[in-house]
Structures are given as C-alpha cells and as structure tokens.
Length: 163
Image 1 (cartoon, one colour):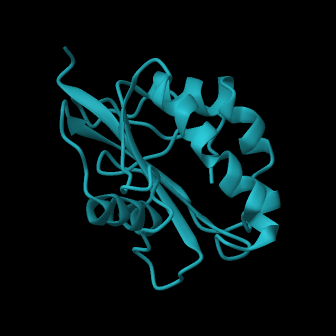
Image 2: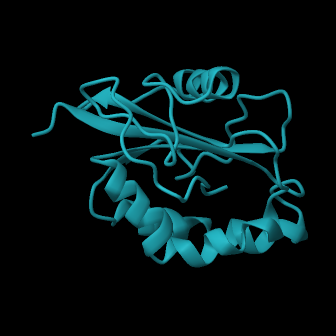
C-alpha cells in the first residue's frame, strides 16, 4: 500500500441556482458523473453529504460556487478519470452550466494514505495555490510534485480541471 494518496479540490461558479432550469441538466447527470468517479480505477473517496453529492455545501460567501473534494491513489488515476473516462464528455460541456473563472479552480496535494481531507482544508489548499502558485503544499496537473519529496515532476500540458 502506498504511503500517500492524492487529494483534490475543484470549484465552479454555477450559472444559476441548483433548482433553476438553466442548470437542470447538470443536476440531473450529477449522480451519473459521481458514479463514474466512484467506479474509476484508483478512486478512493469523495466528500458528500447525505444527498450523495456536495451541492449543499457552500464554503464561500458566493453561494453559487460548488465544490468537489476527492482522493485518488495517484495523479495518473485522477487524470484518467478527468480526461479519459465518460466524465470527459461532461467536462467539455462545463461552460453550459458553469461560468468561466479567471482564478485557479483546482488544487492537488498529497495526504497520508487513508486520510480524508476536510472541506476547510481543501479550500485552504486552493487559496494557498492561488496566492503562492504551485508548491508541494498545493499544486496543479501542470506543475506537480512527488508525494515524498519537494521535487517538481514533469509538466502535464492539461492544466485545466473539471468544474
């Protein structure tokens, strides 16, 4: 068993409230998107409320910002889910449901195997990345760090993330 797993947070500003018809299609497929993640190789955990998702959690003043926090066994496993699974079709359509944000919307970091980050920790990691850029504390697909060192790994040219 690996000593570390990869945690991630991604955020998005929904174009309308969750009960608005403009985002109804996204809300209707959310369980499907989550099921793809849950069944993906390398998936370990995702934050969810009793509703089975995290759409009711609002850690930001802006109530339109949704979050997703999950843990994976590796950067590669998360990348495969994001860019090479049935999730990719939904990712391509994200602008239909989410506004384009100029700031960083995803942060990655290593956690001890079995650790499940809190929403507050995940938000802090994203804010750290926004303020300081990629570091071993919080990084991106494009500027990544190994789990056991502060050595930057080769870049991945897909420095975008799901919303």
